[in-house]
Amino acid sequence: MVKLQIAQDPVADDLLSTDPFALITGMLLDQQFPMERAFAGPARIKERFGSLDPVAIADADPEAFADLCATPPAVHRYGRSMAGRIQALARVIVDEYDADTAALWTTATTGRELFARVHALPGFGRQKAEIFVALLAKQLDVKPRGWTTVVGDYGRKGYRSVADVTDPDSLQRVREFKKAAKAAARG
View 1 (cartoon, rainbow, N blue to C red):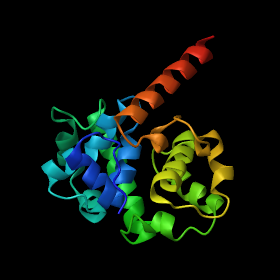
View 2: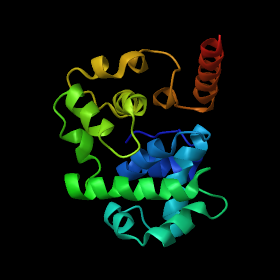
View 3: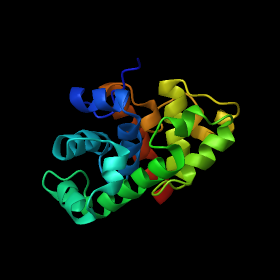
């Protein structure tokens, strides 16, 4: 079994390593929020909700689930709105993948198909989909034919995104890369 170290917390990382819905939820939460805290969010949800079962999450009362996600320490800076996205993600996993999150990637036969599936998820724009496909390939060895074509630079060696975070040092290198990229974009 691959041991992910994205959240930099043993309990959260164990969950990311063993529960596909936790991993995809962490990726969903990874926006406008520190990466390791986003990926620790699924552990916080499981602790409070008692489960990360997509069926239970999809069927949960939206107000109660939003309260659970927004209670300090919140699972995200925008806990209430992200709760709705998490429930929408769970609904897609239940309805389209028979509640088997890993089927999203284990049944994709090409990189293009995998990218299209991830990109179609609620809250997954093009860049987030590219990064998640790269994460699957680089850390979980999910490499359907053509995966490198659909992920662009995220498939390259280096420290560009969460796909490259394997320990505290790589997390710092990704942060430095992102900071430099933002500075370059500002000109």
